[in-house]
Length: 153
Image (cartoon, rainbow, N blue to C red; front, side, top):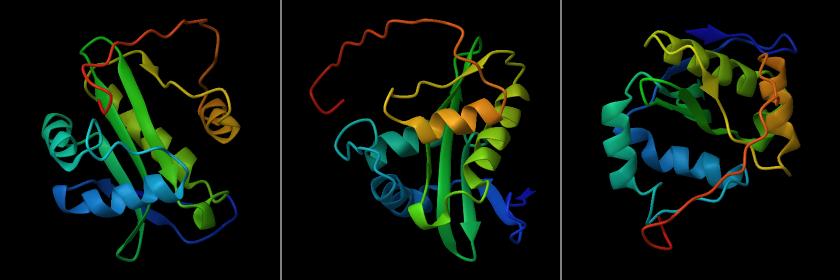
């Protein structure tokens, strides 16, 4: 699938991620300011296990051979989730994040999922803008609780 940037730039291909993309994806996350738990849920082992479960929902945007954006989708057969959407800072404001979010949403919906959600930290205004462009709303107030099996989970 190809996407065209909002500023009329050349289309960027979006393709499913592969195990071999892991290191470059982790670099995109780090460069984008996302925290990465290399020994926990974002370890290569965890990534490979999750990729095996959702091979069509882990997507990357590329320019040439370079990965410039990434998004991870998942679902529990009831609700879909868009996670870890990140675009390299020098590639932002070209519609890449919006295109990745849209492609992931569409891929999740092919699984028969009718509700797709994303959790965004309050200080991440840029992601909020992307999801608002995609038609997502913040009409559900939720309190988020979690229990980690260990500090790096």
